[in-house]
Image (tube, rainbow, N blue to C red; front, side, top):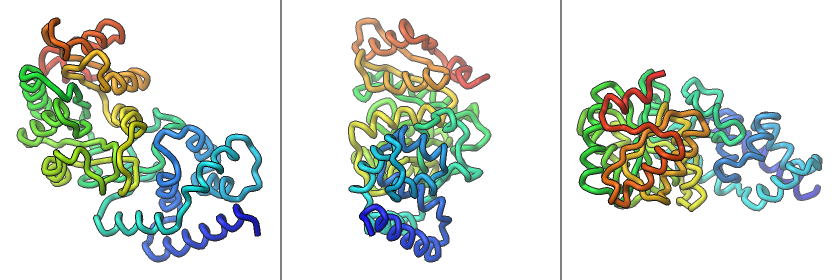
Length: 315
């Protein structure tokens, strides 16, 4: 028996055993496995899964008989990361912590993720209320400078509170600065808020927002495409932008430097056809440069009131 055949036999036995033990479908288990062996936004794996289905795609990669170039490349990436012990630990953590795992065949799978095509998540891990991802309410991503000015923080709080009063769900990244302010303002206004995380649910990030993230799981949700133990990396931060944009109806940037990482989020929003708004400040402020750039070069709408922000989510 060659190595790939052995991998296939061992994994098939593991999937059957775990499906019977935990009551998860093989499809759900396989999609969890894909999140372990591939990085977010892997278009090669995504295309193969879209064409063959998650289970058949795994069989092709592990079976070793298909010599398609993309399958061979994917096989070389996947096999070194395929560990039954890690897979079992991920499942044990999900069950112990009571987290939800969503897959595309679920009614609760967000429709906007289809816009990502081959770069759609293999599965989503959710702590808190997964229903917030599909509830019939407008979702707006509020992001901005981490080193925000007092003015930026005030505007973010005011606009967020106004959006909550209009029934919006506030989405963010849980980061320091504007994102954290928006999450807190949403909770203070009695609304719902969702964090899109660049790490696994077992690795809350940033650590300084531990209390805030706990409150959000009680009154909102934290969602990620990474397995529970995974720490954030530069790549997962970049890919989080595409996921956050896809999960929302519009994106609002409140203050951003000229080279701010929020420009990545804005780029994903534009690529996905999500309306983009920007709140700028004094032209002398470095935190105005990024928003001015979005308005000047990327077609962002200048936002100065809550009504204007709410209009971003109106078809």
